[in-house]
Every structure is written in C-alpha cells, then in structure tokens.
Image (tube, rainbow, N blue to C red; front, side):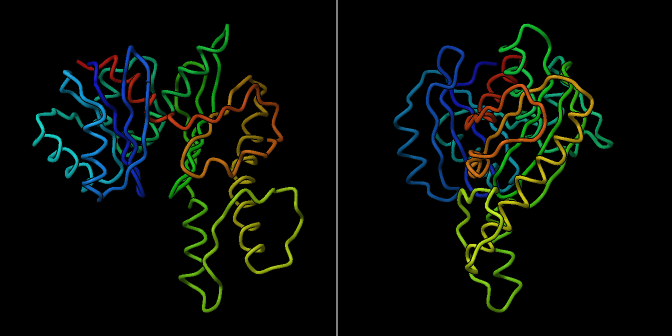
Length: 260
C-alpha cells in the first residue's frame, strides 16, 4: 500500500503527514474537531492517490475522520494490530496481550527500530519515548522485538491533575525546567520542577536499568511535549539520542510498505 497521507490521531490532537517519493515530505498538527482546519489542509495537498492510512488511540475521532474523508472520495484504512502482526516482518512483541498494545506504540517502535538500523552498520537496539497526554516508553531488541515498557501521565495531565484534585494549586504550563535545578522558590516552579523531574527521571531510571545488559542502543523521543527532554543527559551509556517529531507518521509510512 502506498498512501498519499498518513494520519496519527492522539488523545489531544492529530497529525497528518504527506507522503512523497517514499518519505514524509510535509506534516501538520490539527485539532480533533475543527472541520474548517481539516478542509483547508485537505485542499493544500491534492493528489490522484485516493488512499490514506490512519492510526488512532481515539476510536470516536477515527470514525469521524474516516467518514469525513469518505465524503471526499478518500479510502482511509484504519490500522489495527492485526494488520501489523500479519504483514510487517521483524516486528514482534512479548506483551501478554498483543492485541491490546496501542497501535501508536507499535508504529513508533517500528519506526525507531528501522531508523536505528539505517544509521548503523550492525543491528541496533532502541528505546522509543513518546511524550504527549500520556508518556510511553518502549524497549526494542536489535531484532525488532518489543520487550515492553511503561505508560505514565504526560506533563500536562500531571499539571491538570494537581489542579483538579487540590484546593489551591494552580494549573502550570510545564516547560523546559532544567532537571539539574535542585529546587524552586515559587509554587508554580515547584510544580513545574516536580513534574519535569518525575517525567525525565522515570525514563532515565528505566533506561539505566536496561543498559546494564551492555548493548548499544539509540533513544528516540517524540510527541508534543518531547522538548521536556531537550537538555537532559541520560545516565546510561546510550549510542545516540534523536528527537523525531514525525516518528509515528514515519512508522505508518514504513508499515504501509508491507500492507496489500
């Protein structure tokens, strides 16, 4: 399958990626419910190819997008885990319930594995970190096997939860509050620092534990809040840290290569 556009629907927003000559040539982030923004973007990417590929963690949004595209003559395939397990080589998971693994995690993992191999002269293990509404961390062996990982609240969800479940704590916009700062002297700074440390050190601790196996690996970081890691130095002896804003879109494009 060669899609004209790949779509990644997350919990907060969706991304569209235009596929040209086997690469993501352009990408855009769009809201779930702004049909005018969809229409405007759709008009900017005219194509004779009437097939799109979509992955979604929000079934209701996926149905709405599929119906909207069908009205415009687009056949949109919604990717499932079964599509991936049945058609994509060198992608396996040790999950107890493979069909319950998020499709977004599978495409992120596949993209990370392929990109790690492309940049190395030998098979390379990888870690895929996606920082959005939730943060996911997935570990991949060099042969493409997804060992498993972790799911935890993303920084904005943590900030909102503190505001929702306390009487006086404000909502804080979490930015790049450098983890090397030991403490803050304001309530807003306390919250921002606490959330940032929780996020980056959760990932750092897991990666350090895994690195004790003494294998080379790359770290791939994506998602709307990926910049929270921008100035962070992981303690483990990693090979390379790469920020890939289109990791899921690239994963969808690569998965599409194997679909009928």
